[in-house]
Length: 363
Image 1 (cartoon, rainbow, N blue to C red):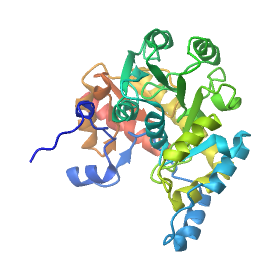
Image 2: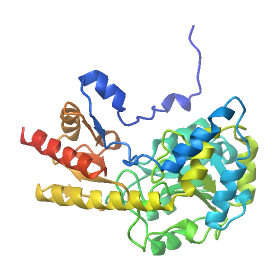
Image 3: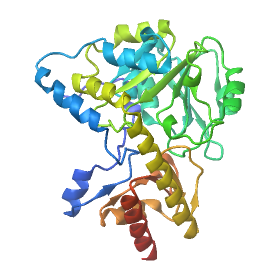
Image 4: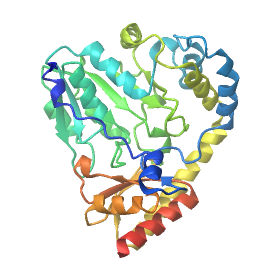
Protein backbone atom coordinates (compact mmCIF):
# COMPACT_ATOMS: atom_id res chain seq x y z
CA UNK A 1 0.00 0.00 0.00
CA UNK A 2 1.34 3.41 -0.97
CA UNK A 3 0.62 6.44 1.17
CA UNK A 4 0.39 9.87 -0.37
CA UNK A 5 2.46 12.65 1.14
CA UNK A 6 2.28 16.36 0.66
CA UNK A 7 3.66 17.57 -2.67
CA UNK A 8 5.59 20.20 -0.72
CA UNK A 9 7.29 17.58 1.46
CA UNK A 10 8.20 15.35 -1.48
CA UNK A 11 10.80 17.93 -2.54
CA UNK A 12 12.60 17.94 0.81
CA UNK A 13 16.05 16.39 0.97
CA UNK A 14 17.20 14.99 4.29
CA UNK A 15 19.64 16.94 6.44
CA UNK A 16 23.13 15.50 6.05
CA UNK A 17 24.93 15.54 9.38
CA UNK A 18 28.69 15.26 9.80
CA UNK A 19 30.02 11.71 9.81
CA UNK A 20 29.82 10.36 13.40
CA UNK A 21 32.84 8.92 15.23
CA UNK A 22 31.24 5.53 15.87
CA UNK A 23 30.45 5.02 12.18
CA UNK A 24 34.04 5.72 11.12
CA UNK A 25 35.36 3.40 13.85
CA UNK A 26 33.14 0.57 12.59
CA UNK A 27 33.75 1.19 8.90
CA UNK A 28 37.54 1.49 9.05
CA UNK A 29 38.22 -0.52 12.23
CA UNK A 30 40.36 2.23 13.75
CA UNK A 31 40.50 3.98 17.11
CA UNK A 32 41.68 7.41 18.32
CA UNK A 33 39.67 9.21 15.66
CA UNK A 34 39.53 12.99 15.64
CA UNK A 35 36.42 14.79 14.45
CA UNK A 36 36.76 18.30 13.07
CA UNK A 37 33.63 18.21 10.93
CA UNK A 38 30.64 19.49 12.91
CA UNK A 39 31.86 22.72 14.56
CA UNK A 40 31.72 21.15 18.02
CA UNK A 41 33.65 22.26 21.10
CA UNK A 42 36.96 20.33 21.23
CA UNK A 43 37.28 20.90 25.00
CA UNK A 44 34.01 19.20 25.87
CA UNK A 45 31.98 21.16 28.42
CA UNK A 46 32.44 22.87 31.76
CA UNK A 47 33.04 20.68 34.85
CA UNK A 48 30.12 22.57 36.38
CA UNK A 49 27.88 20.93 33.78
CA UNK A 50 29.00 17.46 34.86
CA UNK A 51 28.14 18.19 38.50
CA UNK A 52 24.78 19.77 37.65
CA UNK A 53 23.70 16.87 35.44
CA UNK A 54 24.66 14.29 38.07
CA UNK A 55 22.68 16.21 40.68
CA UNK A 56 19.53 15.96 38.55
CA UNK A 57 19.71 12.28 37.63
CA UNK A 58 17.57 11.12 40.55
CA UNK A 59 14.67 13.24 39.35
CA UNK A 60 14.52 11.81 35.85
CA UNK A 61 11.33 9.89 36.65
CA UNK A 62 9.60 13.28 36.64
CA UNK A 63 8.71 15.41 33.64
CA UNK A 64 10.90 18.47 32.96
CA UNK A 65 9.83 21.92 34.09
CA UNK A 66 7.88 23.05 31.05
CA UNK A 67 8.54 26.77 31.45
CA UNK A 68 12.31 26.40 31.83
CA UNK A 69 12.07 28.91 34.67
CA UNK A 70 15.67 28.80 35.94
CA UNK A 71 17.26 28.82 32.50
CA UNK A 72 15.02 31.59 31.14
CA UNK A 73 15.69 33.77 34.16
CA UNK A 74 19.43 33.14 33.90
CA UNK A 75 19.37 34.19 30.24
CA UNK A 76 17.15 37.17 31.04
CA UNK A 77 19.68 38.48 33.55
CA UNK A 78 22.59 37.87 31.18
CA UNK A 79 21.04 39.83 28.31
CA UNK A 80 18.98 42.30 30.39
CA UNK A 81 15.61 41.30 28.97
CA UNK A 82 12.41 39.99 30.51
CA UNK A 83 11.86 36.18 30.57
CA UNK A 84 8.72 36.63 28.48
CA UNK A 85 10.97 37.59 25.56
CA UNK A 86 12.71 34.18 25.64
CA UNK A 87 11.76 30.88 24.01
CA UNK A 88 13.69 27.68 24.72
CA UNK A 89 14.10 24.94 22.16
CA UNK A 90 15.44 21.45 21.59
CA UNK A 91 18.29 23.09 19.71
CA UNK A 92 17.74 26.34 17.84
CA UNK A 93 16.33 24.36 14.89
CA UNK A 94 13.33 23.57 17.11
CA UNK A 95 12.64 27.30 17.36
CA UNK A 96 13.09 27.69 13.59
CA UNK A 97 10.33 25.13 13.06
CA UNK A 98 8.08 26.86 15.60
CA UNK A 99 8.52 30.20 13.84
CA UNK A 100 7.60 28.71 10.48
CA UNK A 101 4.52 26.93 11.79
CA UNK A 102 3.47 29.95 13.80
CA UNK A 103 3.80 32.61 11.11
CA UNK A 104 3.62 30.99 7.66
CA UNK A 105 0.41 30.25 5.82
CA UNK A 106 0.40 28.02 2.71
CA UNK A 107 2.13 29.88 -0.11
CA UNK A 108 3.82 32.45 2.12
CA UNK A 109 7.45 33.11 1.29
CA UNK A 110 10.61 32.97 3.41
CA UNK A 111 13.81 34.41 1.95
CA UNK A 112 17.17 32.83 2.78
CA UNK A 113 20.73 32.58 1.45
CA UNK A 114 21.76 29.77 -0.89
CA UNK A 115 23.39 27.67 0.44
CA UNK A 116 22.58 27.88 4.14
CA UNK A 117 21.49 25.72 7.09
CA UNK A 118 19.18 23.14 5.52
CA UNK A 119 16.72 23.27 8.43
CA UNK A 120 15.57 26.72 7.25
CA UNK A 121 14.31 25.24 3.99
CA UNK A 122 12.92 22.08 5.61
CA UNK A 123 11.00 24.02 8.24
CA UNK A 124 9.53 26.43 5.68
CA UNK A 125 8.38 23.57 3.46
CA UNK A 126 6.84 21.55 6.30
CA UNK A 127 4.81 24.66 7.17
CA UNK A 128 3.58 24.75 3.52
CA UNK A 129 5.61 27.88 2.86
CA UNK A 130 7.82 28.65 -0.11
CA UNK A 131 11.57 29.12 0.40
CA UNK A 132 13.11 31.82 -1.80
CA UNK A 133 16.82 31.23 -2.25
CA UNK A 134 19.29 34.06 -2.83
CA UNK A 135 22.77 32.89 -3.94
CA UNK A 136 25.83 34.12 -2.06
CA UNK A 137 28.11 36.77 -3.49
CA UNK A 138 31.82 36.10 -2.98
CA UNK A 139 30.99 33.48 -0.32
CA UNK A 140 28.98 36.04 1.68
CA UNK A 141 25.29 36.74 2.28
CA UNK A 142 23.87 38.83 -0.54
CA UNK A 143 21.93 41.39 1.48
CA UNK A 144 20.98 43.46 -1.57
CA UNK A 145 19.75 40.33 -3.30
CA UNK A 146 17.61 39.43 -0.30
CA UNK A 147 15.99 42.87 -0.33
CA UNK A 148 15.28 42.49 -4.05
CA UNK A 149 13.69 39.08 -3.42
CA UNK A 150 11.09 40.48 -1.00
CA UNK A 151 7.52 40.43 -2.34
CA UNK A 152 4.09 41.04 -0.80
CA UNK A 153 4.09 37.32 0.08
CA UNK A 154 7.30 37.53 2.12
CA UNK A 155 6.70 36.77 5.80
CA UNK A 156 10.20 36.04 7.08
CA UNK A 157 13.89 36.31 6.25
CA UNK A 158 16.69 34.06 7.52
CA UNK A 159 20.12 35.57 8.13
CA UNK A 160 23.08 33.68 9.63
CA UNK A 161 25.83 35.78 11.19
CA UNK A 162 28.59 34.58 11.19
CA UNK A 163 27.64 32.50 8.18
CA UNK A 164 27.87 28.72 8.03
CA UNK A 165 29.60 27.18 6.11
CA UNK A 166 31.86 29.95 4.77
CA UNK A 167 32.64 31.84 8.00
CA UNK A 168 31.80 35.25 6.51
CA UNK A 169 30.14 37.95 8.61
CA UNK A 170 27.94 41.03 8.38
CA UNK A 171 29.05 44.35 9.84
CA UNK A 172 26.80 46.51 11.99
CA UNK A 173 26.87 49.20 9.31
CA UNK A 174 25.81 46.79 6.55
CA UNK A 175 23.13 45.17 8.69
CA UNK A 176 21.56 48.44 9.79
CA UNK A 177 21.46 49.61 6.17
CA UNK A 178 19.85 46.28 5.23
CA UNK A 179 17.17 46.79 7.89
CA UNK A 180 15.94 49.93 6.14
CA UNK A 181 14.82 47.78 3.20
CA UNK A 182 12.91 45.20 5.25
CA UNK A 183 9.14 45.79 5.54
CA UNK A 184 7.70 46.30 9.03
CA UNK A 185 5.57 43.14 8.84
CA UNK A 186 8.44 40.76 7.95
CA UNK A 187 10.09 38.71 10.72
CA UNK A 188 13.88 38.73 10.49
CA UNK A 189 15.33 35.54 11.98
CA UNK A 190 18.95 36.18 12.92
CA UNK A 191 20.84 32.96 13.62
CA UNK A 192 23.90 33.79 15.76
CA UNK A 193 25.07 30.26 16.59
CA UNK A 194 28.74 31.25 16.21
CA UNK A 195 28.67 34.82 17.51
CA UNK A 196 30.86 34.08 20.56
CA UNK A 197 33.83 33.33 18.29
CA UNK A 198 33.77 36.69 16.48
CA UNK A 199 37.02 38.69 16.69
CA UNK A 200 36.09 41.69 14.56
CA UNK A 201 34.28 44.30 16.68
CA UNK A 202 32.60 45.66 13.55
CA UNK A 203 30.49 42.49 13.18
CA UNK A 204 26.82 42.98 14.04
CA UNK A 205 25.74 41.44 17.36
CA UNK A 206 22.01 41.72 17.94
CA UNK A 207 22.17 41.19 21.70
CA UNK A 208 24.42 44.16 22.33
CA UNK A 209 21.15 46.07 22.10
CA UNK A 210 18.44 43.40 22.42
CA UNK A 211 14.84 44.00 21.35
CA UNK A 212 15.73 47.31 19.72
CA UNK A 213 13.80 46.19 16.62
CA UNK A 214 10.62 44.09 17.11
CA UNK A 215 11.14 42.43 13.72
CA UNK A 216 14.35 40.70 14.85
CA UNK A 217 14.26 37.22 16.36
CA UNK A 218 17.71 36.28 17.67
CA UNK A 219 18.58 32.58 17.78
CA UNK A 220 21.48 31.22 19.80
CA UNK A 221 22.65 27.80 20.90
CA UNK A 222 24.50 26.02 23.69
CA UNK A 223 25.93 23.51 21.17
CA UNK A 224 29.02 25.47 20.13
CA UNK A 225 30.95 27.60 22.62
CA UNK A 226 29.34 25.89 25.64
CA UNK A 227 29.95 22.36 24.29
CA UNK A 228 26.43 21.03 24.89
CA UNK A 229 25.69 19.72 21.38
CA UNK A 230 24.50 16.34 22.69
CA UNK A 231 22.10 17.94 25.17
CA UNK A 232 20.21 19.80 22.41
CA UNK A 233 19.29 23.16 23.86
CA UNK A 234 18.95 26.51 22.13
CA UNK A 235 17.10 29.74 22.78
CA UNK A 236 15.51 32.68 21.03
CA UNK A 237 15.17 36.27 22.19
CA UNK A 238 12.34 38.14 20.51
CA UNK A 239 9.36 40.45 20.84
CA UNK A 240 7.04 39.15 23.57
CA UNK A 241 4.11 38.81 21.14
CA UNK A 242 6.15 36.48 18.93
CA UNK A 243 7.40 34.56 21.98
CA UNK A 244 3.82 34.09 23.22
CA UNK A 245 2.83 32.44 19.94
CA UNK A 246 5.82 30.08 19.98
CA UNK A 247 5.28 29.11 23.61
CA UNK A 248 1.65 28.42 22.77
CA UNK A 249 2.47 25.89 20.04
CA UNK A 250 5.74 24.32 21.23
CA UNK A 251 5.79 20.87 22.81
CA UNK A 252 5.38 21.35 26.58
CA UNK A 253 8.57 19.45 27.49
CA UNK A 254 10.72 20.27 24.47
CA UNK A 255 13.87 20.90 26.56
CA UNK A 256 14.59 18.00 28.87
CA UNK A 257 15.60 18.23 32.52
CA UNK A 258 19.28 17.43 32.01
CA UNK A 259 19.57 19.91 29.14
CA UNK A 260 18.10 22.68 31.27
CA UNK A 261 20.42 21.87 34.18
CA UNK A 262 23.44 21.68 31.87
CA UNK A 263 22.65 25.03 30.26
CA UNK A 264 22.16 26.82 33.59
CA UNK A 265 25.52 25.48 34.82
CA UNK A 266 27.26 26.37 31.55
CA UNK A 267 26.17 29.99 31.90
CA UNK A 268 27.92 30.16 35.27
CA UNK A 269 31.38 29.23 33.96
CA UNK A 270 32.73 32.24 32.08
CA UNK A 271 36.29 30.94 32.46
CA UNK A 272 35.47 27.84 30.42
CA UNK A 273 33.94 29.96 27.65
CA UNK A 274 37.01 32.20 27.57
CA UNK A 275 39.30 29.15 27.41
CA UNK A 276 37.25 27.74 24.54
CA UNK A 277 37.42 30.96 22.55
CA UNK A 278 41.21 31.22 23.06
CA UNK A 279 41.65 27.61 21.97
CA UNK A 280 39.60 28.18 18.82
CA UNK A 281 41.37 31.40 17.87
CA UNK A 282 44.81 29.83 18.42
CA UNK A 283 43.72 26.80 16.41
CA UNK A 284 42.45 28.87 13.51
CA UNK A 285 45.64 30.93 13.41
CA UNK A 286 47.70 27.73 13.28
CA UNK A 287 45.57 26.10 10.58
CA UNK A 288 45.49 29.19 8.39
CA UNK A 289 49.27 29.57 8.65
CA UNK A 290 49.88 25.91 7.80
CA UNK A 291 47.40 25.84 4.92
CA UNK A 292 48.79 29.09 3.55
CA UNK A 293 52.27 27.54 3.56
CA UNK A 294 50.88 24.80 1.31
CA UNK A 295 49.59 27.43 -1.10
CA UNK A 296 45.96 26.71 -0.18
CA UNK A 297 43.42 29.53 0.05
CA UNK A 298 41.38 29.85 3.24
CA UNK A 299 38.27 32.00 3.30
CA UNK A 300 38.21 34.71 5.99
CA UNK A 301 36.31 33.45 9.03
CA UNK A 302 34.71 34.86 12.15
CA UNK A 303 33.57 31.46 13.37
CA UNK A 304 35.12 28.33 14.92
CA UNK A 305 35.78 26.76 11.51
CA UNK A 306 37.30 27.64 8.18
CA UNK A 307 36.78 26.68 4.57
CA UNK A 308 39.84 25.86 2.47
CA UNK A 309 40.09 25.47 -1.29
CA UNK A 310 42.12 22.34 -2.12
CA UNK A 311 41.96 23.08 -5.87
CA UNK A 312 40.94 19.47 -6.44
CA UNK A 313 38.04 17.13 -5.66
CA UNK A 314 37.62 17.74 -1.93
CA UNK A 315 35.33 14.73 -1.45
CA UNK A 316 38.10 12.41 -2.57
CA UNK A 317 40.49 14.02 -0.08
CA UNK A 318 37.82 13.80 2.64
CA UNK A 319 37.38 10.06 2.01
CA UNK A 320 41.12 9.41 2.07
CA UNK A 321 41.49 11.29 5.35
CA UNK A 322 38.79 9.10 6.89
CA UNK A 323 41.07 6.08 6.42
CA UNK A 324 43.58 7.76 8.74
CA UNK A 325 40.94 8.51 11.37
CA UNK A 326 40.46 12.22 10.61
CA UNK A 327 36.93 13.50 9.97
CA UNK A 328 36.50 16.87 8.27
CA UNK A 329 33.62 18.03 6.06
CA UNK A 330 33.39 17.98 2.28
CA UNK A 331 31.48 20.99 0.96
CA UNK A 332 30.22 19.27 -2.20
CA UNK A 333 26.63 19.18 -0.90
CA UNK A 334 26.82 22.99 -0.58
CA UNK A 335 28.03 23.38 -4.15
CA UNK A 336 31.70 24.00 -3.24
CA UNK A 337 33.29 20.92 -4.81
CA UNK A 338 36.91 21.82 -4.10
CA UNK A 339 36.45 23.00 -0.51
CA UNK A 340 36.77 21.33 2.88
CA UNK A 341 35.33 22.82 6.06
CA UNK A 342 37.55 22.23 9.06
CA UNK A 343 36.58 22.92 12.67
CA UNK A 344 39.39 24.23 14.86
CA UNK A 345 40.28 21.62 17.47
CA UNK A 346 42.88 21.22 20.18
CA UNK A 347 46.54 21.78 19.35
CA UNK A 348 47.08 18.03 19.03
CA UNK A 349 44.00 17.54 16.85
CA UNK A 350 44.95 20.42 14.55
CA UNK A 351 48.46 19.04 14.09
CA UNK A 352 47.16 15.53 13.38
CA UNK A 353 44.71 16.93 10.84
CA UNK A 354 47.45 18.89 9.07
CA UNK A 355 49.83 15.91 9.03
CA UNK A 356 47.08 13.75 7.55
CA UNK A 357 46.06 16.32 4.96
CA UNK A 358 49.67 16.74 3.83
CA UNK A 359 50.09 12.98 3.57
CA UNK A 360 46.92 12.61 1.50
CA UNK A 361 47.73 15.54 -0.79
CA UNK A 362 51.25 14.19 -1.44
CA UNK A 363 49.70 10.98 -2.72
